[in-house]
Image (cartoon, rainbow, N blue to C red):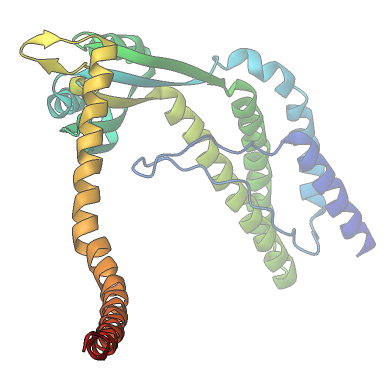
Length: 321
């Protein structure tokens, strides 16, 4: 049993040295059928009662010694993406044209969104965003076609991620995992003891799961490098044009003055509506009680004044007689 445990330790050390864990995959669009799962860490079976398997791993170790030169045989793999912000006269028509362009270039639309926005003059205009994927070798021509008939290109950004090393590591790791799977399959076919068959089957299941994970990561890199993503923000021309009055295009100062006047009139109307509906009734409810109190005291004052005048008249009447 100690011998088997020692074999298992040697096996684990060799496989750890052979392959490095793949790095996290870049941004994945929900609409794409790309698989980018990270490697799943699983516990190895408790024992490996197969001497011939440990011997066969010596061949895998010798094979892995040549993986340092494997990068030279793998073509440079770069994931290229682009981001654009463009101004057009017809955003809806431009989105439809970009969709047709993606299909023409053997690509596809990842996502698209058309919505309404408002200019500084409170005019509703359409605006949109769309993301497409096209073959990497056609990225330049796709960008040129998209920018061909636009009013203005507000921004353009291209990025590239070199994943050659990650892909090479995955490739060498896959080679060693498949070698281990082949040897385990042979051992399982020749095994006669039930316990030995079960132990071999557990290890074989582990390596097959790891192989599927590595293949999924490699497929993601391959498809991401083969298809470049282009994200486009489409802005309506009206949002960048100055206000026009009588066919004259005003300067920025006059345009700002007109817009300030419109804002003032809007604010004044809003104030009057709020004053009539809310403020005025509140003031009336506050004023009426005070006014009633004022009338009451004025009535008392007049009565008192009338009494004083009546007394004064009576007092003057006897004196005249």
